[in-house]
Image (cartoon, rainbow, N blue to C red; front, top):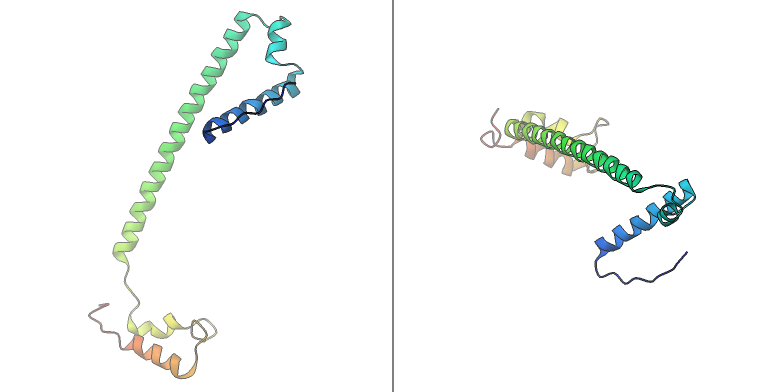
Length: 137
């Protein structure tokens, strides 16, 4: 096995080269020989390589089509999510002052944030005094 130090100016190229090396390692582990060994040992002829290329390209086209369909599905889902968000945004109304106690209290009747006493009364009263013109019901 040869060793070589390569200086990469482009991390994309480095990533691709690393993938080639990893792919070669996987192939060697699976078949017990390199492509060079396969060619020089006459394990496959030109017709065999051309057939491999054709099959790989056919697979690539199937992967491209599948990826395009997945992309379309994601776009449709995103469009649907945006439409729902717009409907929710358009129909949102802040809580009415009559629900101030529910808005400020948790199930155990403590004010959100842990405030008590006069602070609690002030916040609840401020909510109850909210001008109905701001949040008409």
